Length: 399
Ligand code: PMP
Image (cartoon, rainbow, N blue to C red):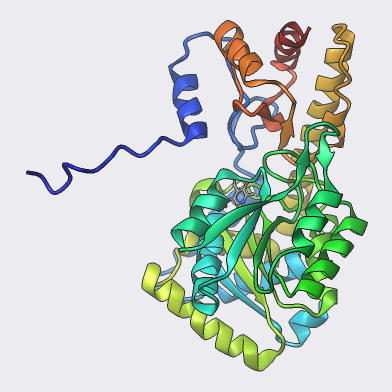
């Protein structure tokens, strides 16, 4: 019989499955609120002007396509470090940060996970309840047991910080704690600065290993404002990991532009850690692709293009915020009794709306509005053209 006769069909990705159903829907009024992608006011995936400029220059220069170093583009890696840790970071000056270009935020998490497995094979990994679905699968694939720490409280629609902190305080030394640095996916509920300070202290007291996942820098308040967790951990003197991604902030999803940064105790440790990270990369895919990191690096290195990018990034941030306010206002106007103002307090691309799976089914069946069954919607899929329609539909299912 065939080698593959016994291969079971893997469950399909719930969100990609939603996209397939959306694409097959022939209703012209259909709206896809399921995806985790930023669309502009015309419902289009933007190609940023700063990216276009940098690509024009690259095309004209016709650079050769040799292999990159295993850890990727050096200028890009340094630019990543400055965005995360701040241009005047003492850690950077002291050589305490190791950064490697990675295949998006996912690739950074995977390199980090493989390196951690070599460091402490018995450690358990803790992710928020709920979290981005791939966190669990990715760390399990790296050989770890993955558990949840309490996070979202559906009663307050915020973070149950007391429960989260109590859980972390009871974990054994060396446990890996995956934290969403800002714009929590899927809930949109973030920690306050003061709560971040408390998380840093628990990590210190219990000797936990913090792994910050920064997929949405610039989507909450601003580039440096959104790095508050990274800055607080930096000031703590602890060792920690940061995975970061330009998928969203540069709208470069398919180019796979991310990085893994690891904060060490000193320059000598950095050299040894980098050598091991390079070994992980070498045995996985040898070295990363050139184009995306070159473009992001060029934008960040040019004051003109960087200013252009920052303007475009704040445009995306402000448009999402306007859609949050627009949705809350429209629901109120339509006489919905339930207070939806929590939607404006949530940050980033997503909202946990509190819509039930049954309500989500009705939205889809009756209105062609696609959301995740958990009630997660992507605010960046709303625009002036569909906001009223979506608000009407939500009003009719919650009334
Ligand atoms: N972490 C979180 C929390 C995310 O939401 C995402 C993207 N949806 C990623 C990591 C992965 O990002 P990338 O597409 O750059 O791999």
